[in-house]
Length: 77
Length: 77
Image 1: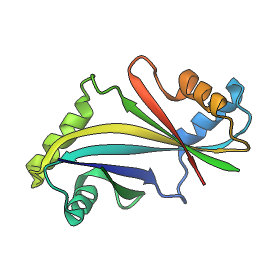
Image 2: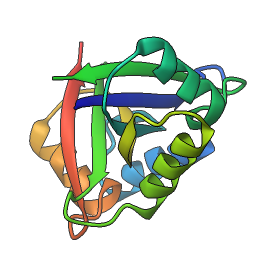
Image 3: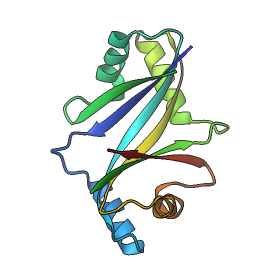
Image 4: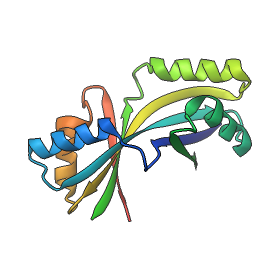
């Protein structure tokens, strides 16, 4: 069994309104050192066998929206 | 400026219904090797200065729900 983490994040050029709200909330709490926050998601998959091309296909078909999101695949030991 | 990634995930003992839906969808597509999927979120913070205790406080106060979620702090270079 192989564990694979897929990190999906909004492309850097796009405004992350949820992230901006988080940054503003942290600043209002007491955390003035926060300059920026961006929010992404992580999908942790348990696979019977790992094939990078197939995991990329999963990302392109379901896990990420390639128009607005980037993804990064990380194989855990 | 320091970049810090906070990885927030549902505690392993809790049912991740969104993750289960993703796993079932992947299996229906053509990816039969998927055994399980769990979904978490990643908050990437840009901080003027890094203080681990303060980032933990951000997690406990806003970024994670300690009742149902675990978090892991990763300092990027």
